[in-house]
Image (cartoon, rainbow, N blue to C red; front, side):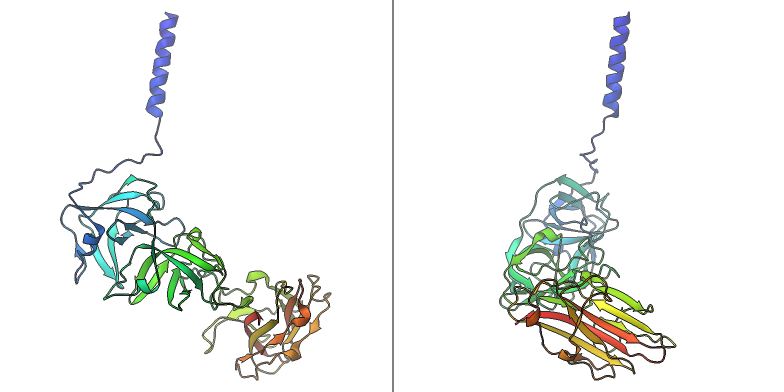
Length: 414
């Protein structure tokens, strides 16, 4: 009897374990009618002159070429087959459901093929009810194209929505010290990619992307992305930074360093502020006709406040530069002490204990009235070593003080 009871207990336990076992790797498959199967190219052609809602039982198969994982896309998937590609605009995020390389079937009945700013897409797609995963790990190889190939023909780029690869491209010099987007205000931003023939294309990235605050890759190489379009502008959408391989030698030589304040941060890249007297600080502004962000300081806010404030650069190694040159722009207005420019090779971390060399007279400065002026090329041949830092010193009194603006702090090797 004891043996029988033991066997019965084991059987009950085994059945309980089997009943409790869950397969987390296999999502439930929705039961959606397949209807007639069409290609993505046929799906795109459903749109003629107006947004068109599909009333028949149709399905389309495709492989996910871009998902939401990096945050550069939100409520959006791109799918592609052997004929074409299209954007799926979703009613909810699919970041836990569908991933790059998933082969899916989309049940199209009730969905609308729309054109928004000349981008063809299928809208109002419920990712849980209208997309079914078939398999995973089926990556699609990008099509190798040139920037010229992506040009609009008629209304659309011939590669709209497709995964492409551009070779021998680099970001333009004006952009390479910027980040991919604005991670502070979380704004989308455009950067410009150029090929060896001088053709350019916009790379647009979201301020919510995981790489928004990353400085652009500075070399030349290959660039894999999705082709998107906004009205008559063809753009590239990055899936993830691992798709970029811009490590080769550039065709066009750029400045060694640029701080242009377009990231709206005074202290990014290792810049620091120090208050010796008072608490007046440098800030970011974009007022006026210069149409750009810049560093600004003023000791006036209803009344003047006595202050001494320093803006100190990061450390530079100029050892291997042939002819290092410093350049920046300045503007100012109102009565007060002139801004001073210093350099040191032995920074202590404290501006008051550091031995500085005053190189103010080496620069050309604004003549006032907020008129911008270039500093001219400031020769740094005496500082071809490591540990070189620069600093702007601003002073004001209780009775006066100028407003100073600085932009495009640049080190070149010419």
